[in-house]
Image 1 (cartoon, rainbow over the protein chains, first blue to last red):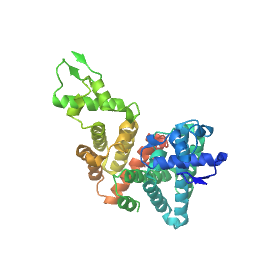
Image 2 (cartoon, rainbow over the protein chains, first blue to last red; image 1 turned 90 degrees about the horizontal axis):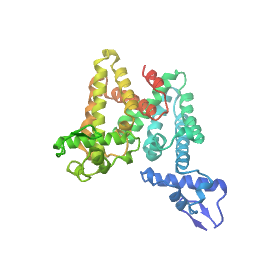
Image 3 (cartoon, chains in turn green, cyan; image 1 turned 90 degrees about the vertical axis):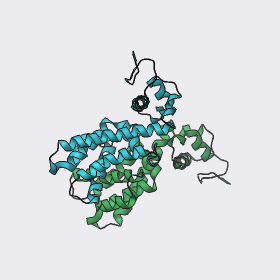
Image 4 (cartoon, each protein chain N blue to C red; image 1 turned 60 degrees about the vertical axis):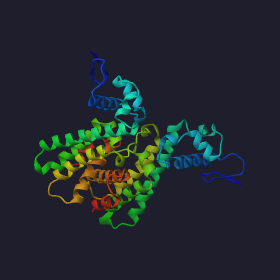
Length: 181
Length: 181
């Protein structure tokens, strides 16, 4: 039994359909953590997953499709982070709790965050990514409670802007968290 | 008299020191407008400015130094846009006017905005860029009036977040401007 760098156990046989896809997405996320999105290629993901460089084409039409799957996984992680924050926050502190979780996500998932809100992937071309993004945004919207649409969008903008400024080193995490209060 | 694409008049003689630098920055901004920061190189900027490909090294140590000068010019434009908004806004609507100007800047200077708040230039290494950024941020801070530091940072975060979401097509300009109210 050999274990590839992405942690998927293999016995020489082909990956099951879903396993190969996930192994490639995991490999791509690992590549992205290096900080340079250009380093994420189908070929390099295939190498990390221990498959031939043609194998990714069973699942991804090209590099952007792989990046879209990575970004979609990022939005799922963001949604989970927001949901966990909601579970731990008193109702009257919900917007604050969501904002904190959003900012912390940007700091702990810096490369994912850049990809999710960058220009490398055209979300309109990737339904899976749109759905994942909507999942996170809907949770924000529903959890914000009895506020109007403008107030929800403003809260999202505040959390997103502070998160982006922190991720880029223009504002400290401490100051950003303090500004939510 | 020939005129290069960057609009600088030439008579065959060398550029004056400051003129060449500005011509290269202008050429780089034009290249950046294509949407792909990778297209901005010293060599291509030199070609657009009509000088030899070694000439840029008189002013820029490398590609990142040129991008830093472009980003600095972006922050100067942002500062001017904010100052103009202030001049047109009643005191009690200042934060709103600044937010609107910030969001409009991101939409009309999309590629500059991405560079200014992206990860391609390490601001800490470029004093000129840090100074230009501080110029814009100080104007926000001073103009915000009798608010505490957290309120100013929150207002900056809101404007910045909405601007970024609009620039990435995740929120409409109309909705973002509406959310400021």
